[in-house]
Image (cartoon, rainbow, N blue to C red):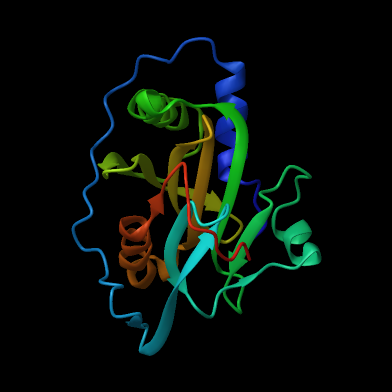
Amino acid sequence: MRMKPMDEKIMAMLHKTDAVPNVEQPAQTTLRGKADLSGLLVEIEGEKILFREQEWFDGRVRMTMPKTFRLMTQREAALKYPSERRPPLIYTNDDLSVNLALNHTGNVLDEADVEEFKDALAQITRSTQPIREWIGDGIRQTEEKTFGYLEFMTPALNTNIYNLLIFISLDKRALICTFNCTEWERKAWRPVALGMLDSLYASETGKGGRTE
C-alpha cells in the first residue's frame, strides 16, 4: 500500500491555490460511534488491544493510541511513503496496514483560523483528489485548542484507504495527524480512530514526556 502522505498532498495544493474553489458545502461529521478508550483496553476484530497515552513535543501534545503501535523503520517508511518529505513520525501495526503519522509543518496556522483552514482543506480535497467517499468534516473545541478534522476514502493499489486527517495550530504552525487503514479494516478501526481524535490534547505549554 504505497502512498504519498495525504497531508503533504493537501499542503502542496494549498500552496498552489490562490482561492478556494466554490463547491458544495461538505457534510459534517460527528464523533458518534467512537470507541471508549478510557479503560485502555479495547477489543478490535476479536483481539483485546492495550492502549496508552503517548506524548510528543515536550508533553504539549498527547493522544491515546494502541500500545502495540511502533515507529516505522526508515526502510519501511521509504517503501510505504516514497516521498522524501514524508512525515517524520509514523506509527504502525505489525502488518503496516494501520498507521498514524504526525507532521508539524511549516505552514502558518493561527488558532483563530482553524475552522477556515478546515473548510479550505475540505473544499480543495474534494475538488482535486480522486475521493472514493467523502465521509465528512468537523471541528472539535476544547478549553485549550480548536481541532479540525476530515474523513474520506481514497484509492490505492487493490484497495481503498480510509483517512482521518486531524489538524491544530501549534506554535502558530499546522500540526497534522493522519490516521489511515485499509478499506476492509475501516469497520473495526474507524471507531478507534474517532476515539483517538477525542482523546487528543494539545497546549502551547506542557509538562514534558515521551517523544517516541
